[in-house]
Figure 1: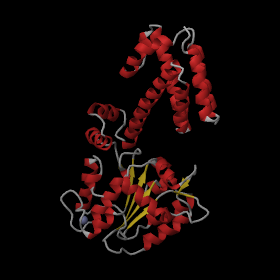
Figure 2 (figure 1 turned 90 degrees about the vertical axis):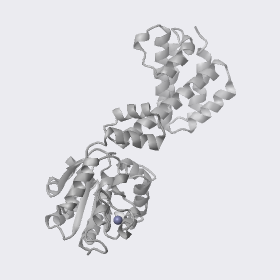
Figure 3 (figure 1 turned 180 degrees about the horizontal axis):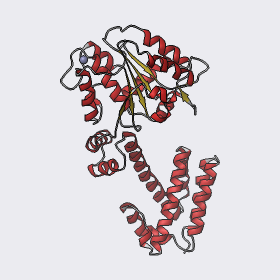
Figure 4 (figure 1 turned 180 degrees about the vertical axis):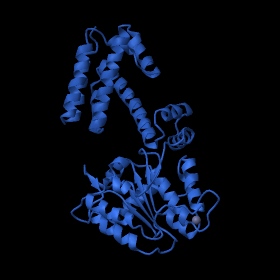
Length: 374
Ligand SMILES: [Zn+2]
């Protein structure tokens, strides 16, 4: 990964390059900062730059034999340590998950700890850098370099390290081996053993610059300039936070579309349509179903307020208000409590794993009975 592939972070890139030029590369770094700002990407780009045999002015070349191997993350002098899950079938060490790791990093190096666990575990599991890893770390650190002047070990999330392993790492840092650079990449540097922390050179990675983050999400998600600016404003320079916002926005649009559809079919007594819609909603994840019901409750309350001319308490988007101009008259004193109760009960049942298709079908029949009351 070349530096140019890392979003923004111009100052840090310059500092790292300068450190190399001045022959001041530290044997142990701690890149720390919030998730989604590009710490792992920076660590890999820096390692690639150091190892590149044909450096450009401000970046690695991307084409020399060393860069070619780095671009696939298969350079023999590049080592990774990261949290894995316990697995009775194989030893819980990073090397046993290296294929998945390379695929994940090459696809997008801005993933979070949870996203990583999702990609290696089929169920809820706790990740860790287990005791077994300490043997691997020692082995790799003692290797002589194969092709480069330096070997580089990138430890992703050292705060997830088990005690035995952390002590091993501490011993290594106390007597740093020749021509070795260890870059620890941490989301929560406070959780790292202070004795380890004190033996690293800390590099705080701040948020991605607004303009760079904005360009990146427009490119990746093809969203409007205005929406991108709004999202950047609340993302604290984190690509992860920005993505969360984009997904939430998408879900709001979906929930709005399904709520209006549900109200339409219920008002029209369209029973087959109501059943189809219930089936569709039931296919979503429980979380998404709950979000839909919660969103519906909020929108009902807003529409009741709109109908009651309490316009100062309305928090709706432009599209939602346009809908309310026609719909709000159906939400009134005679049915608001019953409507709210239908959605609250549905939420309660979904949360307790009642069959979702049943819950949505039952709810839509109940809505049919009360939606025309006034
Ligand atoms: Zn190169």
